[in-house]
Image (cartoon, rainbow, N blue to C red; front, top):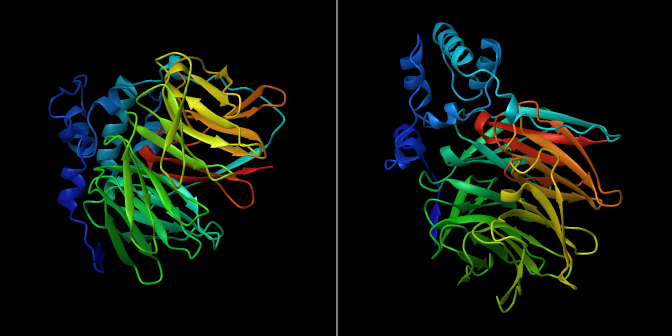
Amino acid sequence: MKSIGSLTIALVFLLVSTNPALAQRGRTPPALPEGEGKELVLTACTSCHSTANIVRTAGYDSPAEWRRVFSTMIELNDAQATTIANYLAEHFPVDESRRPTLIPGDTDIEIIEWTVPTLGQRSRDPVEAPDGSIWWTGMWASLTGRLDPETGVMEEYKLPPTSRPHTIVPDDEGNIWYTGNSNATVGKLDPKTGLVTEYETEARDPHSAVFHPNGNLYFTAQGAAMLGRLNPETGDLKEINVEPRPYGIKVDSKGTVWVAFNGTNKIGALNPDSMDIRYYEVPDERSRIRRLDLDSNDIVWYVNSTMGKIGRLDPVSGDIKQWDSPSGSSSHPYSMAVIDDVIWYNESGMRPDALVRFNPATESFQSWAIPSGVGIIRHTWVTEEGNLLIHQSSSNQVGLVKIN
């Protein structure tokens, strides 16, 4: 266990160590079309991501729209921003095939979004702390941030520069726990002092985490194919090997820990004491489950990301039923939350990213376009008031969905 008081983040780490373009040295990034502004785009944009992010975008028809998007990623002077926006609008117009199929309905929502202070951090996985503040993790910048939703005031806390925190969860005292996805740790930030305590894990890439009523923190490690249990009081840590790529994790009312698997077509039920796990197989070997959640009857709801479906597992009978998402097989459902037994998730394969509501009682859908819509909602959080916290990591947005 390591205690860290004063931490710094080197710019070279942010631009080089966390650069996916450099992390994919074995791949040749796609070439950009020739034209005025191409070299400037390469200079400004590929310090944080490869050209694949641009080529695969669904595009925008106007320079103004392109400028709105990249202004949330990087700060440029007016001349360079204008040149880049004109180039992108000319060569990457709207791809209508990526538009979501939006379904009207009777539910009213309001989506509020905030741009986080440090651009390029890939803000994600917002949560609500006991005092009502909203926290997020800036994965690429190794930081976590606090937002006052009433005033919009934000502040950021530096974490160990190699941590690249994937997910955060608050405890009852208001401490912020994070998974150090790049330095094999689970960490705790004390917001009152700014001090960070780290617990080293055997798993190389702690991923998602959840607190259990027994006081322990349970977490997944996708690449290492492991599950872990940390006792925050003693620091005791137990880790086990499981099926490939455990991802989302939730706890039901009886204390069972449910795990989504992104490397196989299975959902796991973990005994929190023995750490024994039972697997439920989802139809079709191509199925991959990123996230799941529980309703008031402890029925498991999940996103079948590769098949463009959402599904329901009855743990008692083992019965599974699935529904096609409105935008079809390429919609790639990702996050999931259950609010008052109504299912909320997103279609991450669409542009803009679409927020979807599914009412199991009527088996009906309703959906909305996310205003900033160029990123991916990878995780959601239900607030005490029954609203939904979302994000758009590509454009460094944190959002609140008020459900009326």
